[in-house]
Length: 168
Image 1: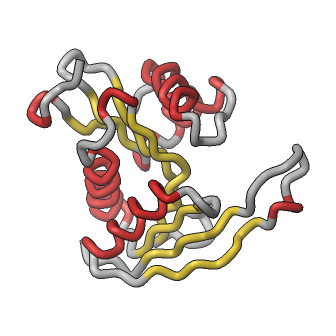
Image 2: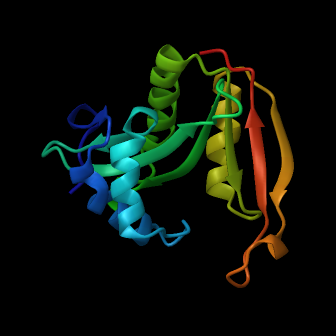
Image 3: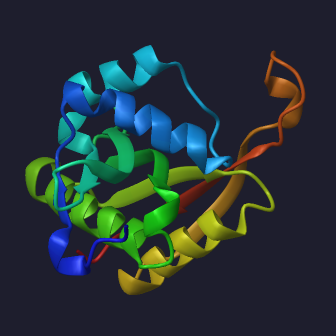
């Protein structure tokens, strides 16, 4: 069942959400799936720089995980964004990203967002370029990790998108 926009609210993740985030990432068929343990840790240690969108029952139906870079404290790195298949196409990823960066800016003073995207991931490319447009920010793209940098087999390069300065 698809919830209405009014039935959904954005919140900080808790450890109890870790399993749902892992499932949403797994079911996305697009994200690199991390261990279930990593999602539990993420919800514990990085809830302040991550967000979930909850349905009318309070269950997570989407998430964005991120952290403030220690070497660049004005930069929020967005690790993963995913929305449950039944909720896609409704702008939830954009709402999550906007809500998270507004909160993290208020709490940490971020002025820039970074993420990595593999070539050909048009949904992520669209999400982050439209984010940059909404926030009046330029986008700089450079390859962060080459395909050969990954020790565990074939992997596409990861292109760093640096978006900023932001107008939040």
